[in-house]
Length: 76
Image (cartoon, rainbow, N blue to C red; front, side, top):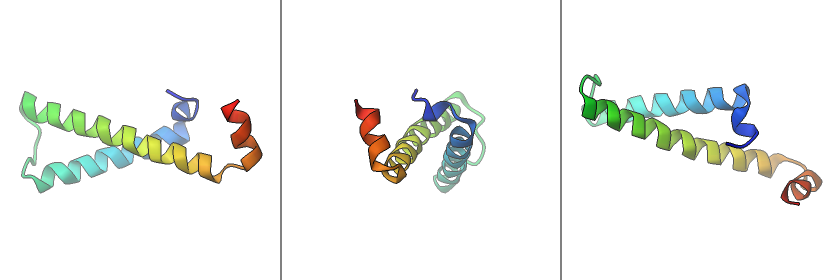
């Protein structure tokens, strides 16, 4: 995990968005309640995958919006 991924203001929205999108996807495919082990496993894998994807997008957004001289310092 990067320093950014340890910040509460970054993790909170990313995790919330991942859970909301996962719940929407689970409802779309007809899994309304996660009662079985297989359904919970699919839910957890979907949340983790989406959380990592949104974390990457957020990290790239922060890197893109940061001043150029600070971005160069981070790569050294």
